[in-house]
Image (tube, rainbow over all chains, first blue to last red):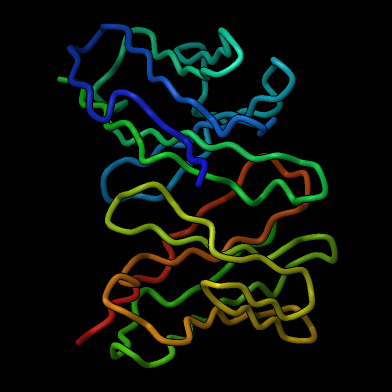
Length: 116
Length: 110
């Protein structure tokens, strides 16, 4: 069964450093998303991406964050100058719109980011 | 998107049907009801969705009331592996962001 894969599974970084989280969405999917979940808290939407541009973003997704689809398979989330409060599990998801509501998302297993 | 309300936690005996309620009294006509679950901080897993008709798939059944103000997710024969947090989300088609609540922590007991 096709799945969304994320790397790394866990990254530890120092405050102020840049991190890149990588995702390989399901190959025929067209919509891509990043969500995050701070430990013990709710899942929060960050950004959605379609046709090589951001479709929608939340207030959390400020200038510190960026997304990119550098090739035909990867979808990345870059966090510049990480802060302690960026420590969270980051989930990538993908979906496709053709005849299916976009609320049916397929999630990866997540990348745990720990900022020290 | 409409706000949803779910109980904080529920228990169910292994092998019995688990019935998880969700209230979405302000749901609009073009909003679907989606159910996801999250097993111990893993990535959320899509379960089922519906608009107004009852739906069934290999994982669960979704019963939506006629007025669409509430719904029930049914896991027909719960197993220990069904222990998870279950999220009910109301969202429009072509809505890019899903708004997640706290969900219901379902504990399946032997």
